[in-house]
Image (cartoon, rainbow, N blue to C red; front, top):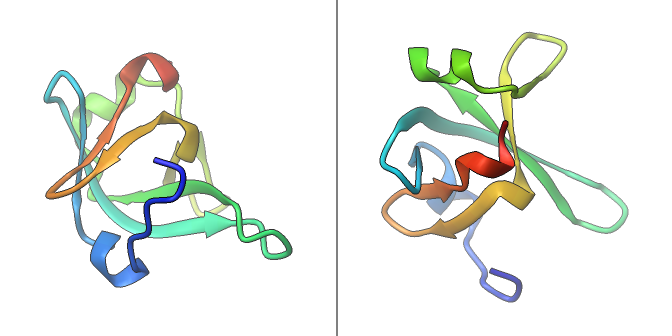
Length: 86
């Protein structure tokens, strides 16, 4: 994915799914390092019950975070590797 560019508005509200097809929720926001611009994670909204089985980090307001390193592709969906989440 390095080099691929997606505007913020094109990522927000996309469904997040694992490569096995399990739904995790939707993209609410992204977190990034302000100095370098490096993406750190995506914030999940409307998390599905399946996310309870995953060891996902949470924000101070208890929102789930999916690490950027787990993202495989961004198209109609944001596809993540479940192996990189547990």
